[in-house]
Amino acid sequence: MSAPHGPFHRVGSPGGPGCPVGELPIHFRRPDGSLGSAVLVDAGLEATELELLRTVAEGLGVRWGRDDLGWLAMVPSAPDA
Image (cartoon, rainbow, N blue to C red; front, side, top):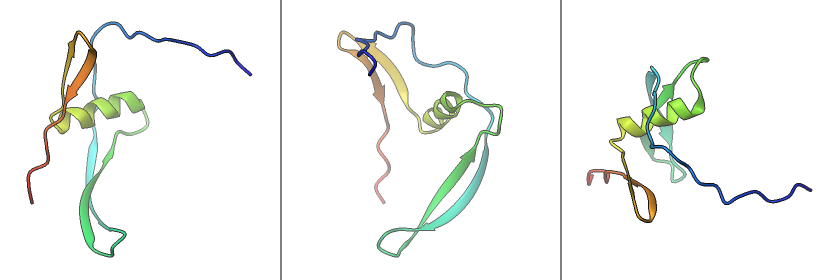
């Protein structure tokens, strides 16, 4: 069994490159049987998972920050339906 590692301290700042993506609107069935809408986002074979996550976060309007307690992300609320 490997020894535990940590604590880990990230330095620098959030952000970095995103990636070009393709979007495909889809419909899906929820557990209750109703239909929902979503978008499949494809980053292709060359992008990393992190680049895709950065691109999705930016598209959702996530804003990053840091204070005395550490990193934080401001995530906009979904509009009321």
